[in-house]
Image (cartoon, rainbow, N blue to C red; front, top):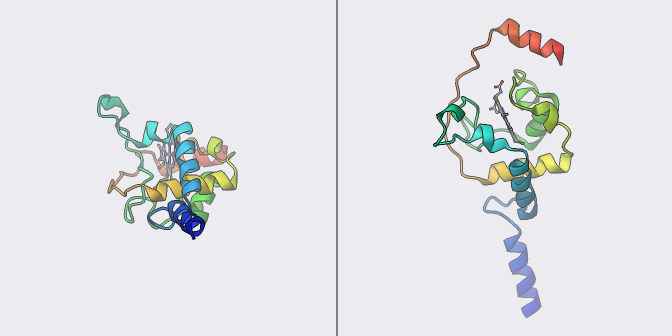
Length: 140
Ligand code: HEC
């Protein structure tokens, strides 16, 4: 009986608040750290130069990844288009590098980003002409 209870506790511990897999979330957190996502996606209070108008990949429904499916997130990292089909993501978002991650790792990053508390952060559209975006896309 004690063993059964211990197993149950372990199962509970392995699932996050949203039912996510804790081992994937932990791995995702590690990858987000190694990938330096926070360097661009987290404002640095001590260095105003770091306050870049970049989307914060947090799970807010309106301004973040809240409505993105796992498949859309993976497609975004693979082909550089938001949700895998919208506008191409411009530099310095290093999606060409992140595309080298395995599906399993990208799933872990998604699980981690979904596990952190959402913040509302409306980001202005880039101040780049449609022609410049098209030219960037042609060079890919
Ligand atoms: C060197 C800076 C930089 C780094 C590092 C970086 N990003 Fe980005 N990211 C950006 C910029 C800039 C954009 C916006 C690009 C655009 O809109 O054209 C962006 C866009 C995104 C988007 C699209 C969000 C949306 O709503 O359009 C996601 C998701 C994202 N990044 C996730 C990540 C993850 C996950 C990592 C780490 C593995 C990461 N980024 C690392 C700069 C960065």
